[in-house]
Amino acid sequence: MACSLSTFLSTLLLLSLPLPSTQDLAADKSALLSLRSAVGGRTFLWNTEQTTPCNWTGVACDGANRVTALRLPGFALSGNIPEGIFGNLTNLRTLSLRLNALTGSLPLDLGACADLRRLYLQGNRFSGEIPPLLFGLSNLVRLDLGENEFTGEISSGFKNLTRLKTLYLENNKLSGSLLDLGLGLGLGLGLDQFNVSNNSLNGSIPKSLQKFDSDSFLGTSLCGKPLGACSDEGTVPSQPISVGNIPGKRKSKLSGGAIAGIVIGCVVGFLLIVLVLMVLFRRKGDERTRAVDVETIKQLEIEVPGEKTAVEANEPSTAAVNSSGTRKLVFFGNATKVFELEDLLRASAEVLGKGTFGTAYKAVLDAATLVAVKRLKDVTMADREFKEKIEVVGAMDHENLVPLRAYYCSGDEKLLVPVMVEVVRRIQELRQPGSELVD
Image 1 (cartoon, rainbow, N blue to C red):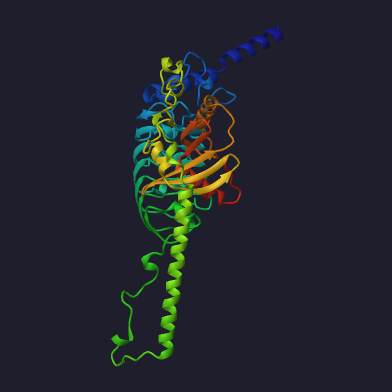
Image 2 (cartoon, rainbow, N blue to C red; image 1 turned 90 degrees about the vertical axis):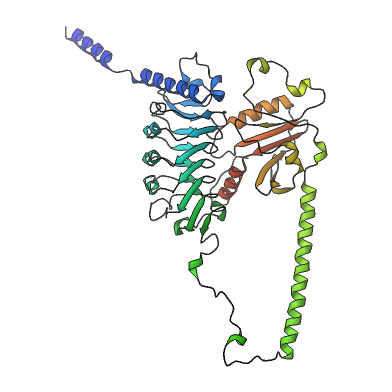
């Protein structure tokens, strides 16, 4: 009798327990479907017939089948993100929506993702002031809001993000002074990656942030180390005081030694100018020899992977059908197409470095456009196989992987075009001890 009663009570207890895993998984799936309906793009390739979203591209789950990572870089997402989506994805630890065309302000329920560690939103068109909801995400380690249209001042609310290691705010419309992220906010001692370049910031750079390279502050009105000294750090006479302007002093004639010194100085100065000109002409000649041969350009066509219809995907590629040999510069996702292949190959190229798989160049298209290009060597695979693999790499999202903007593939010539601002960041990181970079 006692045994039967014990069995009955155990069964009753099990039946009374909630089923959070199934309910939470359904909520996660519903939230992702709402996101799909709102921003579209390559999320339409998700197989919604599956009961779990954990197998969808860009979605990762934990052992309890809760969505913990959503990585959709360059997925051609566009429009506003509505409320009611991230409020259900409460187990998110990584959210990457970089290099898309998302607009408007961030949804308020993003603040419900209390476990969020990494938030990558760069390369979109988010606007308005940086929302206070971010300052409640106290577990954030990496925060990238660069290349958007955020306005207003850099809020003191960042002091709540005591675990932050990366803060990127470059290429926005931020204004005002730069707060002391070391003493005033308690952040500077922990930050190892920082960038506020190309904003309308002014004033002096706080001492806690002076450890970063000048590239982190370019395109602003900031002053102080590592940039030029601020005007109030020392006074310089507006006009030099000459002996002739002092009352009671007479002009004296130059001695023979002084005249000889002046002549020697002028000769040395002239020789230095000639030497500098020779160095500049030699450097210019080296840059011309590094320029990519523009005669290899035949035709140009731009396409975005992942945007073909099902009928087009089953047809032979344009390169195979077109007997004239059309060559394509392929851009990933919604990457801005501000240049063509002809512009890229015509530009002078400066070598950034050489690696196992080829040489990286910096191409100057015009006064405001810099492009990084990596020319691959010894790649022994068919064009079709190369394109399939590189599109997989282009969709990957990793903090140590430089994101790709475009690529070019035709026979033995294979070029990769990474995002230039990311290349600059990685160069900065390589200068710091213990940094790693995926080639």
